[in-house]
Image (cartoon, rainbow, N blue to C red):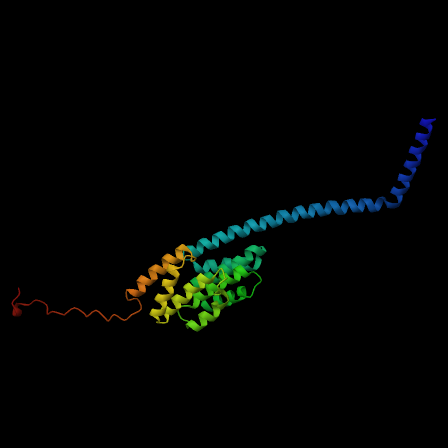
Length: 237
């Protein structure tokens, strides 16, 4: 009797499954197809994205080598393309390097425009780097007030960039002829334990450089006295 009841139960279960399949089988197949396509699409996207990153990395290294080798024009061309087409991470740093390449090419106006765009961006670290490099790009010809206004957001005592800002401002004093203020500022950096070691060494060198007369008019070297060429008349053979 037990076997008969089991067989009847299995027949009922089979009939129910067949009925369910007839009603919902198409939906099940569609759901499976969606899952398969989603997995395949994700794998394709992952492959494509990885290829894009690898290509961007190669192009970035190539542009960096051009810039280091003095070919700023080629670096500008490649970094400009990366800034438009590379994956988001490479886009951001490529924009920064594009501005640096424009400076190296002597195109300060376009470089400053790119720096300003980055300064307004959502990445605070990149914005700070852009602000410092922007300041270095203009410090040789801008008044100190302009440089100080640009660097003001970085000069707070709790800013990670305060020493970099102070170095640019000290150099601005020197370029604008205020050697006393420049020496004091560079000495402050050289003696500050919180400043990066390399910066402290640069500050020591700048103090020695300025104290040794850099930026002062030391006069001109007189031309040597012109002597008449030797002739028999002046007693020389």
